[in-house]
Amino acid sequence: MLPDSAVPVPASLMTLLAVFSSLFTAPSFRTFTALACGFLAQSGKRTVCGMLTGAGLSRAWSHDRAHYFFSRACWNPDDLAIAVARLVIALLVPGGEPVEVLIDDTLFRRRGKKVWAASWFHDGSAPGPAKTGYGNNWVVLAVRVWLPMLSRPVAVPVMAKLVIKGTASASRLWLARRMVTRLAAELPGRQVSVTADSAYAGEELKQLPGGVTWTTRLRANAALHDLPPERTGKKGRPRKKGERLQSLAKIAAGAVFSRVTVTRYGKTETIAVHAFTCLWYSVTGTAPVTVILIRDKKTGYDLALVTTEKNPDIARVIERYAARWAIEVAIEDAKQLLGTGQARNRTAAAVERTIPFMLACQAIAVCWYATAGHHPADAEARRLDAPWYTSKTEPSTADMTAKLRRVIIAARFKRVCPCQPEPAEIHAIRLAWEDAEDLAA
Image 1: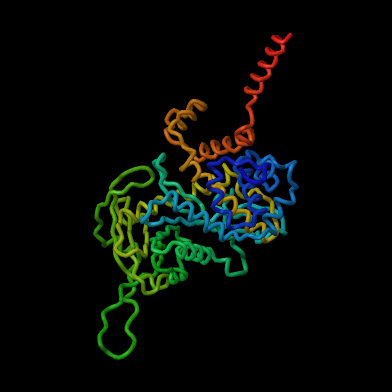
Image 2: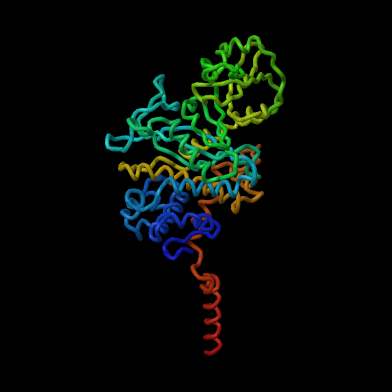
């Protein structure tokens, strides 16, 4: 129970929320806890006032208190993101194993000219051929984990950066590299393996810190070079790169492909691959990269991957890139199930804090279910409620959030003090008094 008796919090959830107490002042931490519970318990709109209503405090607290938390309170969204990342890694990533990081960007639609950093961006989900939308564009970093109750990987969003046109933050790759650098600095001695799509490849990768590898899709027109030749002993600067290689199509036409067994998209299959080491000088500089050509058809190649990892396990790199789809699922869950982005903040501080806060709540919900909320009978109970799910054997994100919502709401109706009598006990005492009065009469 929090010191503020108006905000009852389940003990299992409070254990996770207490990790963030050092990031806030005491009053702000009470507001953070209340809004987090309200966000997770709300089944309607997750606006700022909607979070207050979800917490059951719409009549007890002024809405200014909730808006003040996002627009003017003293806390840093970057520090919150790092604390969430450390929590997720500590609870869900086995010690000593590489931290698998996924990166993607998404558009949260907004309206109005006064919304901070809102502009027109590419939106793959937009109707029509233009594929553009107006709103705030965010670069999201997620940690890919395996939960014991699921057979699929889960991407847990932990960090997010706002794209601001006209500034250095206009570059998604620049924002992604900064987030990865900050995360790697907080995890000394841990290997960080980043996977992203082809949009996240550029000169920023020359500044990757040690212990970080980057895997992405290789563009068909990438300028690849052979490794630099040995020094000749003559005067002058030695060459930094070798001869320019042929196009990927020509390399694939004359290459010898080998067979590799991989598990991707829920299926185990044997595919043809060809890997070679070269330089992608314009992107990674003098650091060698490994290019992997994947052939699903009889000729040419269907997909080209590139990784900065030294002596990589080819099958594992392919599986890791295929598992990148988990971040697409996580972003969809954030928008469709949890209502992330529904808040209508407009000022700079509020806009830059609200999405990281909501993604942090999503990560906390996954951690709660993985550590305290899961029960083996959850999937069976869901099948009883929805008998048309005849083949359902694992809980979904909707099941996780629904169970946490029920636990949060139930906490409001529990007695505050263990010594407080239950209604059944009060009724029994009244019956005993009535019997005693009858005997006295």
